[in-house]
Image (cartoon, rainbow, N blue to C red; front, side, top):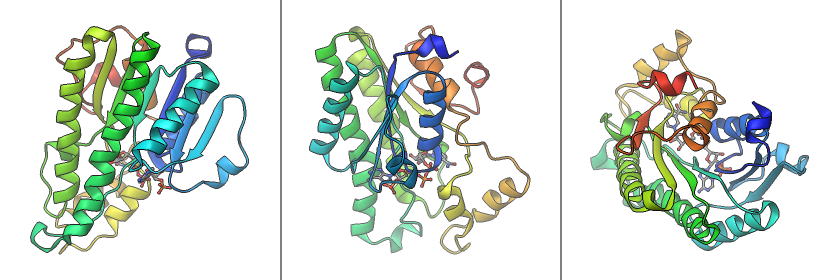
Length: 254
Ligand code: NAP
């Protein structure tokens, strides 16, 4: 597998922990050069700046900083083949009527504007590069299943799905693949936060506690193979833009 991806370049946002860190490690193991960002600098990044991994502290809300980060990656490795907008937050959690408008706006600034900033940073450079590429926006089943207490999260992920559909249409003729991928339920800090919620703020909390007790959560490295398949495998039917890893045997078996 390593030789197949040797020299390819991927960027993943939100790599300080969780799914983003899992993707970074799997891509690295597959032979890609990988650049990642997050707001905080994790301990692993302080000790690891080598020829195949590059970390920079960038907040995805800062469009200019994200564009500079993309330019630095291109300068270092000559281009970007795959960009994954993974950075995201879950809070605020609670009934929609009670949510603080500032907290709602802060959520959308990361989960929607931050994804949009990443899309632009990748696509503008990809058009200059002129050799195609793949953009994967990490979505969620919450984009189409409504959960009480998750008004901000569900609305934001639905926006990511539609944004991805529009960009997929716009970019197809330039050889740029665009997807929104729901990764399944993955054991990360985000799931640990979900399980700690009160049933008042999040009435479905028991379902998530049960899934965890039954060992039904995926690991943070698991979606990596499907993303590499989307980027470097044979093209999918162009109508398939919004994908759920749990429903797609073809992707799970990548
Ligand atoms: P997590 O463990 O909380 O990690 C989130 C990552 O995003 C962290 O590295 C965090 O780093 C980064 N981040 C958050 N805000 C950021 C910002 N403004 N700028 C840059 N980086 C930022 O969550 P996760 O479970 O791995 O989630 C990753 C993605 O998968 C999210 O988009 C989430 O919605 C999606 N997802 C997760 C699940 C699941 O079951 N875990 C299911 C469906 C979808 P800093 O805090 O250091 O910035």
